[in-house]
Amino acid sequence: MEEHYTGDGFAYTYSAREQEEVKRIREKYVRKEDDKMERLRKLDRDVTCKATAVSVSAGVIGALILGIGMCCTMVWAGKWFIPGVLIGLVGIAVIAAAYPMYQHIIKKEREKIAPEILRLTDELMK
View 1: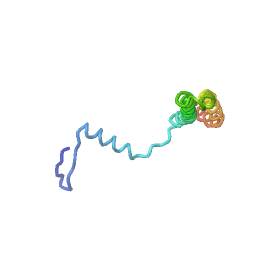
View 2: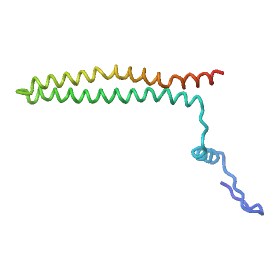
View 3: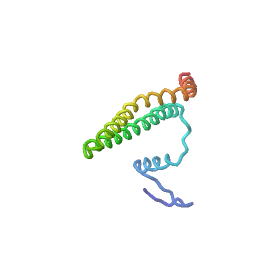
View 4: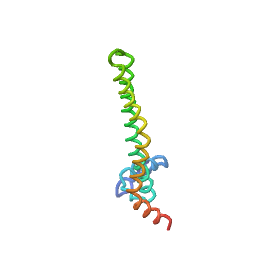
């Protein structure tokens, strides 16, 4: 940065690198207008994110239930063997349901946002 007196006050000049830094900082505070393409991407991404979060959660919970069942059969094998097998089967069922749950949520969410997606794509194609 160079500083020089102009008679009315001081004037400052910045190097190209400093100018780029100033622009980057300024962009953080300037309100960006909604870009239709960015809105389209966000809508599509939100559908997938919700479905992924729910199905991964179901998979993790199912795996934990399966682990409890395995623990019952291996550690407390005596009277807990049969209940452990049943608990493990419940865990396997929850894990197996995770992907169909994902597909169901994707389908429902896509149906819900379809009018907005179609409107945005029509506007972008014109």
